[in-house]
Structures are given as C-alpha cells and as structure tokens.
Image (cartoon, rainbow, N blue to C red; front, side, top):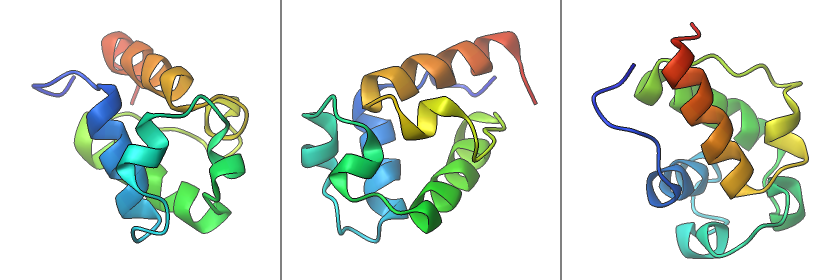
Length: 88
C-alpha cells in the first residue's frame, strides 16, 4: 500500500488532472454525483485509473462500477479498500 491513504481532496485532484482541468477539483470534491454526470469522459476515466495505479498501487478495471455509478466518496472508499487489501 502507498505511504499515504487516499482521501477526497487528493482523488479530486487526480480526477481534475485526468480531465485536463475541464472539471475542477473543487467541483468534484463537492459532489456526490457519478463522475460521468460531472463531465468526466471515458478517456479521463482511463487516465484516472492509471493515476490511481501510480499513486496507490491499485488496479481498477474500466468496467468497475465505482468509476461509473458512484460519486467521489464511493470511489475514495473503493480505492481505500483495494489499497488495504493490497490488491494489485
């Protein structure tokens, strides 16, 4: 597991970076809407999955429901669970 635990602020930054700033970290952190409802595209989700792997050492499949139906709080919980389990 990474030296630091996933939190809402950091994951919001990763999502914003994955969207090239089209969706701000503040907008993402303040929402419980699914990421797609905020304008996060499938390409941005791919970039986010790569960022999560780099940052936390977790693999998230693009078909993972946490990327599509859950908002940022659900994604944070999912990444924490994967990181805790040591899921590659």
